[in-house]
Amino acid sequence: MKALGEVIKVTRSRNFLVKLKSLPEKDLKDRKVVSEDLTLVGVVSDIIGPVHEPYALVKILVPLDKSFEFIGKRVYLVESKKEAKLIRYPDTE
Figure (cartoon, rainbow, N blue to C red):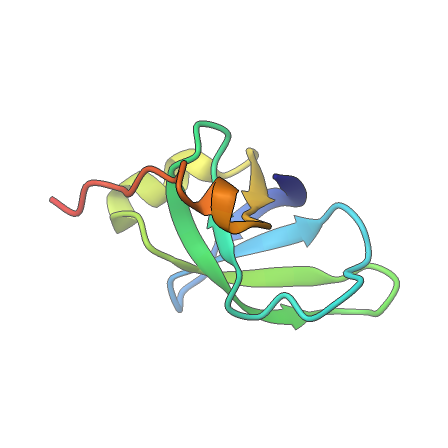
């Protein structure tokens, strides 16, 4: 797993705004994003902001009422199929 960055806020359009830890080396669009406990929290939908300090918009896949628990927490990118097998899927109840 590679650290993507820290969740700054939940936007009105139901995305996480994530301050990237480092400049992206390649396109991150449609990459899966997990929490520290390997729960799938979203999918990268876009990279925004200034080039030297970018942010990622991550489409939220956890229930919206639980999404606010992720503010201030670090999230990670799934980088391989081996890592993808370890993902826990959120309860959608």
